[in-house]
Amino acid sequence: MEPKTPISWVLRDKKPHDLTKIKEIFSVEQARKARRFHRQIPGYKISPLKALPNLALMMGVGGIWIKDEANRLELNSFKVLGGSYALYRFIQEKLGIPGEDTSFAYLKSKEVRERLGDITFASATDGNHGRGIAWAAKQLGFKCVIYVHSETSVRRIDAIKSNGAIVKVVEGNYDDAVEQVIIDAKTYGWDIISDTSWDNYTKIPTWIMQGYLTMLLEAQEQFSGQGIVKPTHIFVQAGVGALAASVIGYYHSLFGNKAPVCVVVEPDKAPCLYESALANDGKPHTIGGSLNTIMAGLACGEPSPIAWEVLKETADAFITVPDYIAAKGMRVYATPLKGDPFIVSGESGAVTLGAMISILKQNGLEPLKEALNLDQNSQVLFINTEGNTDPIHFRQIIWEGSNPVPKECWSNL
Ligand SMILES: Cc1ncc(COP(=O)(O)O)c(C=O)c1O
Image (cartoon, rainbow, N blue to C red):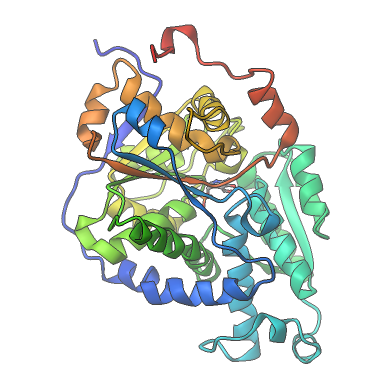
């Protein structure tokens, strides 16, 4: 019998596939358009691409690169890139100028407000997306209502409220919050800005995925500055899969079937993309239950269908990990090896680094390491998708040592 390992995985059957649609949605032109918008937002800065050379040496890979989103537009997460861009595209369309590059200042102008009248934006969230939408709506002077599920922490709710949104708490999990916001938006005439898609609701979630491209355009420019054409591997975390689709779609748009090896990482308590890959019938599959993981941003039971369409064709592997691997990732970031930079990373941000360390150092995971071709030539990209978004939980993990690695899984490093 195979030894039981903390990570489960599905390797995708690599068949050549048609990338035409992916190349359209995630093209460099789309990325530049998104960046032209973001660049005008007061406070926009390129997020750093940080190298951890000493950790890379210890792990036996060529390079570890972290696109660090912990301070993106003062919101501690990459998510604001998608929400703000979708709002921008939505307003442009309402104004009848969808193809233009409209300035941020114009969107805030009295003229625009008068033409548009009152709009209330609404969305469900497990934290960061709602905060980003609330922030963007406030910047542009619109009302916002955000639906969260009953497990959402008070700190996350307060962070959304502090950006001027009304917060409604729904019994159940993230998917229940999505269902409720759809019903209520119909009743009250709100406009939903959701990062997940459903039947006849794909345009806005596509804009959200395109908004994330700013981060990837920056990352590729930063790699070029280091003399690196592209990472050889990418580990990307997933909730509904929009981020992963954007990342993997962009790299396929740039490099076709020579794109980096792409690994989608989910909590073992919310593995909807992994389960969809395992079912191997081409369809997205929903999982139920409380989805009770410390990785709040990844606690989703239903893949976004448009993201799944991309991922089922392009991801190389889908893996699931227990909470303690995310907690370990946070501690590794927070206590760097001598000479490596310190990185503040929350549960959903740190899980990918934790996952790679396990794959490289945990007994029983050698077949996965081999299948992914991880070795001293690998240049591995991670996205630290959030900083300290829930300070109490952050301290419980980093200071108090909650979610420890079980002793039998300690590595001898
Ligand atoms: C910090 C963080 N990382 C990753 C994700 C995953 O993004 P997606 O739901 O698009 O898969 C989220 C989603 O909210 C998040 O908040």
